[in-house]
Amino acid sequence: MAIARAGKRRNKLAPSLLADDITFLIAKARSMATAMANQRLNRYDLDLRMYSVLSVVKHGDGPSQRELADFLVLDARQVMYVIDALESRALVERTTDPADRRSNIIRATEKGLDVVEKAEHIVRQVEDEYLAVLDPDQVQNLRTLLNRVVNPPTGLDED
Image (cartoon, rainbow, N blue to C red):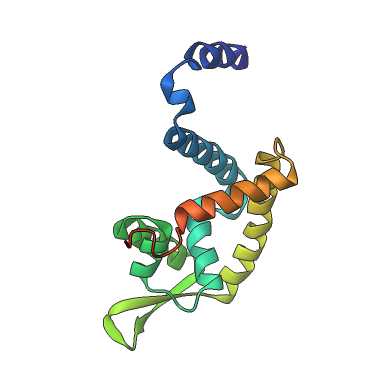
């Protein structure tokens, strides 16, 4: 019954100009995927932000909190909160950056590496399910286009 009401509401709102706004669609797709991932990651007492930090730390070369915040496009306080939560569960550890004593380097612990490996499978599974409405070529095109938007080629502003 709730699904039927949601369907009617969706149809009623569909003619809005917002329904075709790319920024809105990206935000809505992100919200839907995040909710799906958070629900599944909950079995490891993680959410997508925690997973993201663990994944970057696993694949990075000892990033600083500032580098994590910049890469993940999160406020430094949000990253600090996430790192605190991960550190309290012994999934990451902070060490002082020898090159800049004011900065902390974040590294995954063995336990953190084990958890993130399991979580990566869940996130890939969510992505596969979420994008199942697209064929493999469309998924690859979407990935390529989003990467182009997120990481534009250098020199576009020069002239």
